[in-house]
Image (cartoon, one colour):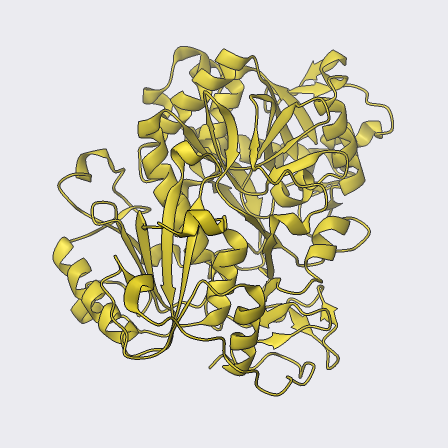
Length: 550
């Protein structure tokens, strides 16, 4: 069913007996699907692992993790995502390149064809929650044709208790058909792949892609639609909490270090990627983690490394040898290798998924141009500016089609592909929350030092962790700061244990003139990007904007 894994793995055990299928159609209630084949409802991890092996969907690593190959789609298919244009929602959606319109008639055709396809397949159903706060959660019912995607969802979302399962009725349904090929001529889509969301019908159709991140991010899009109306800010960020109850948020795009830096042995992990922030504090949307694992090491990231070597973890496009031993440096299938595991695989996770009001907000960027300082203190206006900018520079990121050269990326609110509403809706909510709770804000560069990508080297994680710990314990706020001449950022002049040339990126470059040129080019990119937001923001945010020197 799947394309072959690169190297032969541990020989699969004799095909295990399937767990018993559901005896009635109750598990499909609300989906519009009636299957003539077996339906496996809410299997736990052992049953799903057994099914995925028996159906030749996956193979096991030496540690019992499920290894899968997602074929041609090794990242999200951003250009194939659509939102249905419906009367009750059309005025509040930020239509454009991200939120592409799908006429209702085309959605009905696509949905009907996918449902007809599903009805002839063996199915796996999972009932799960998104949102650790019961007041703001969404009940999700996934219907899929593959056991490993069901396991991914079970790892990724919050698993209801037995009592909660008794009267479970879905708020949103995902019809997931990874091997179904959409037809542009019939379905009105761009390719054979389609991800279509109807906020009015509360149905998501995913077809023609095996990449499991589409399941995760479709529900994140739902939360980004739902929560602002409930006065809760949905955020693409990780979160952890210190022994004193001090919550920290880590904003950042994929590859900037959200998962790595929030998995700190000295702090409890609330969640690694998606959260809400409202009057009751912070809460995780998910019950699992989805970590990028290319070049992962046990020394630098022991928690994630250990979680990825456990039974039931799902490893996307990770290569193993003939004995099932993982090679996390092998990027022959993709740079975007992934590990999905339940959050309780992290030893010091806060399993409530909830925390109080944040004390610190950290905005992460992986600056492949190597010109941003490793840490800067932001004023509230600068925090709003950098939240709207959402800058990073990718090398080989999570979206299909990215090459090996650095690409400057500005992703509004650090999550533009998942924001159905206008950016200012989220920006104003963040500004209000920062001001109301007196939050300290920081910009952290986890990218390159000593030169741009290909010349310099990646920022040492030990330096980044040391700077973050100083920010989180309050000591860094008492340092002496200087103003960066290019970016207007307040940079600490000296931090114990951190070389001065690391704190001042210009000093880390051998060719100072090359640094000046590269920094000026990045300033111009910031200015051009901000032009779209400038009319909608307050005067203090406009004054904080990075601009080309007159």
